[in-house]
Image 1: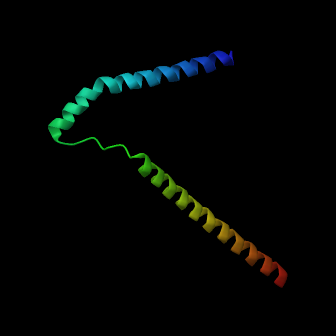
Image 2: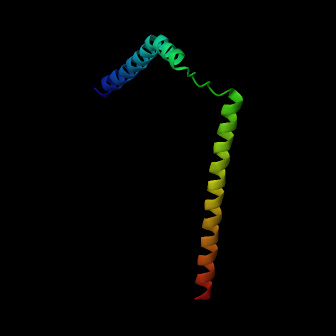
Length: 87
């Protein structure tokens, strides 16, 4: 029985993907016409290099945060160790 639900969920997901693609395809000419009339252009997709740079920046920030947490934890452990030895 569960297998049937899994299959139904899979096919429902595929149907949603196809419906979304169809709507986007149908509305693309309308979007272009509106952009021409309003004088706005579609923002270009980031280049591969820009995407990699953004990913690297995100990784750098995450690494900095993790390093700060590790240093903070180490300081707390040293402080706790020193306090336990003083008692």
